[in-house]
Image 1 (tube, rainbow, N blue to C red):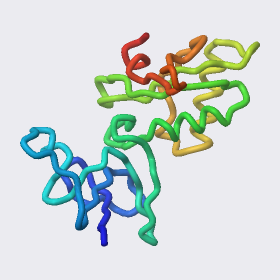
Image 2 (image 1 turned 180 degrees about the vertical axis):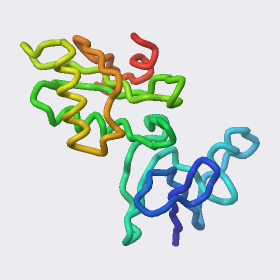
Image 3 (image 1 turned 60 degrees about the vertical axis):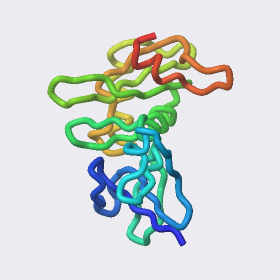
Image 4 (image 1 turned 180 degrees about the horizontal axis):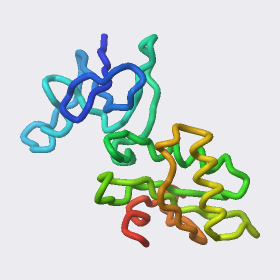
Length: 170
């Protein structure tokens, strides 16, 4: 069989319910022979999947985000897709994309790029309304400290959000 665990960046297991990196091991695994990338993906026999998960008290795994979509702010692991889902549950939000933005005090902050529905005002009141909505929907520390209104999200030909473009301000 296979074993799975949720770890921090150093490979230590995190407490149940905390977000961390999924590591798996078993009779068949992934190896990059002669490739320096193996050091990033295989540690002490554990394959690091590139995904962030939580493990509940019963040992069930719950997907949080791709590791590169995780935002670490003041030591908290924040899954961008979770913040996006909270924003999308507000009737003024048509689409959104969430990324990490550098912050001197916190390391990173949650930055949301929001496409509003037609007629919704792009103003400070709307920003506060959306921030308060996220605080009430998920853990308050996960709210976007920076909200930017845009007309459309940058996307690939298949419709996936190009988060790198949001991070680069494109």
